[in-house]
Image (cartoon, rainbow, N blue to C red):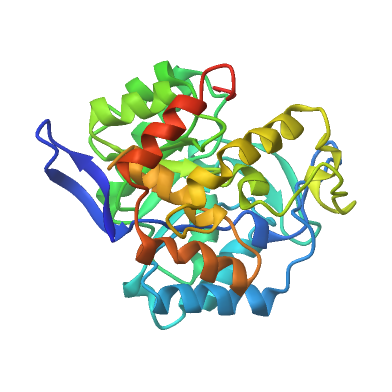
Length: 333
């Protein structure tokens, strides 16, 4: 099962970009520990580096060709793990990274935002070194809060980086439909990354992607783990996991767990596991969507990649879910 990462004309015909597997793998979780400048943690808990590398290599053997990362995931650690996994196999994969946050690799501290042209070039050079490659297929602005005029100045540099052959195209990780509409007018803008899952939909951004003919990269497709079905109201998250302050009883996350129980039977009635069904829903929801589920273990990758064999949800499942997933039941960002 394949998807097009790039631009399409009004008839839906690919015009610029590259083919990828219908799902990719996101690497925030495998980056491990990192702190922002305020001291707040952004880790998903313990990760075994060797297991993460083995999981990615298994995924490649199973047909996964798209890996999404960022220079600030573990302050470069996630990129280095991907570099290990793809060593000798660079031409088999499509690599996307992000930029905008200056990091201290040794201390694992995200120092702050930096979009000066010289800084962006430095970040790109470091990402290329971490990944062990001389080019990125997709380079994405990671700072969603930028004012549009600043983002458009960054876009000008990204066009130059395309001309230089360092990147194949670019995108923006942003949930603001008005801003990404103008950003996507750039000749080599191939994709917009935004939050999209059964519980939370930036529908306006998805509409922009479809109208502008660019790919929608769905981040958070498993709702940061809630759609895996492994958490309950009594779950206690580890202290080193940034999700430790979730309210799984009566908070927003708890309400989403209640909703998951309402739709569980619909999601799994054709043999999908819950993670597979959450991804299958996205693949059924739009042909321009490429989900990038995160992972920490081989078992997680093997389960989620199984959606490529089991395929989309059928029309009756989609109809039943549409009836239950009312605006009152979901949180639309």
